[in-house]
Length: 76
Image (cartoon, rainbow, N blue to C red):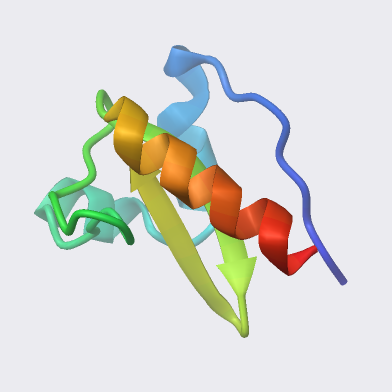
């Protein structure tokens, strides 16, 4: 089943990562942007998607987000 998240308020980021089972990874600093490799934090997180069972994340850098979304649109 495909899950789609449209928007998450800043106050709800921790809840999103808990729901995805990634909260401990977020707190340990082991999540990285799938585009640039920078560490994802609660304040720089911008987007997430699920591909082949893996969750891919984008940081808040505009170029990373644009590339992330372009990949999403190409693969739909």
